[in-house]
Image 1: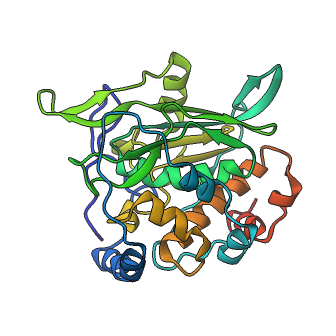
Image 2: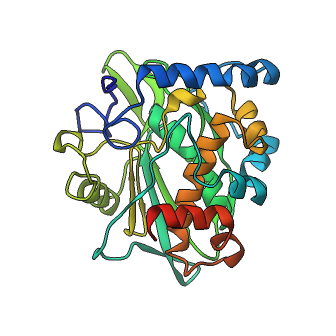
Length: 305
């Protein structure tokens, strides 16, 4: 088994973080296989590695469109098939108070995300999160971002939720990007960005623990990214390895989302189908065109929803 990478936790906590899928990483040989499978994609797309920036930069509209309008046929063809980069589904929990938010006087189930811009695991997880939520609503003000250059899987291409807004008649979304991707050598850490509210920190501290995350060592409590989907499903750690995105640009990844045979697309879309299935359980399976689609039904079956 590959050694766990070191990942920094949110402010005021220090420990080794958790790799994709709670506590197991892909073996080195599998990572090599991912890279080999991606060579053709890199060459044909002409992409270059992303670099970090401390200045907010709005995401390219064309890239956002490709990201948020993935054809239904892609979700249905991929389903939950990702043989090169295995994907972990959200974990279900029961008997907890529903996580909701009031939006324009209406109470909606809420998806809560806690991460940081430097975090490579967060970088990977934002891709399927944006895609899944786009099936229920509309994004605006997504920003370009790359994970920290001082961390494992440096400069992983992604987006930031820092200034993003999300509108949906079915679901509410709330996020915290706790730190930037700018490393400050003077404090041996990344610079602070958003401070969670007391209720957000309470939610994070309670559920991102071995008590609720199956198989999680207690020493890994509080790693990021963390997501609560209505307090009915939890995500802790990236659902697939950020190594799958190494050397690619945001544009290249987004453009390739129509290619169902791409190992990167398979990992992202499989994760998005799992997230969609989880969200459908919060929305009473609305919209039905999404929640009864072949890909989502495959995810529901795999998750025993």
